[in-house]
Length: 113
Length: 112
Image (cartoon, rainbow over all chains, first blue to last red; front, side, top):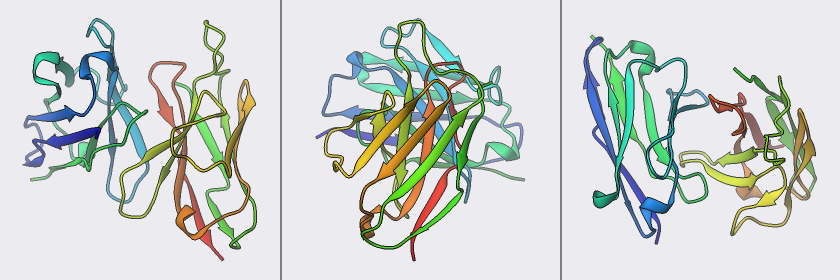
């Protein structure tokens, strides 16, 4: 069974950092391109970042460019999102997704003083 | 960035009746390989999203055939032939042709 489990969310002050993780199972992780998508409370979906299978192609939404870094560790079947210089408007549930498979439940990031 | 504009934003539908959601992009979504990377996602209340349609009209595994996608260039449509109670939720289009990828605002489908 394909499973994606996000973790690492929590409450952080503006300007702080968090590292999100996504543990993948049930499929050959190294064969898949991966994305992070977020959803602010009561709002729509926002695509955040993409990483290719080999990790040599990476893209970011303008809203996070220069502050967030996506990475993957195929040996650990894991995807990461390092989030620095966090802002109140980064508050959201963060999902990792292949798009072709079921999404995880997401992890909530709250940026507040 | 490519702007994705959905309409309507709210869609009340009677059970068993058809429903249609429009999605328009600010630029052509035809990629250099000839494919058009337009996806449709469903998010039921309290659930994570799931993809229904990719490349305009290809249904994902397990998606009922009452869901269909069509369109080309900048103009796309998701149709539900006969709405069922389980179809309640928010539907999003998303373009994967241009970076950054972008979602539409979402269309909330409810039962009348």
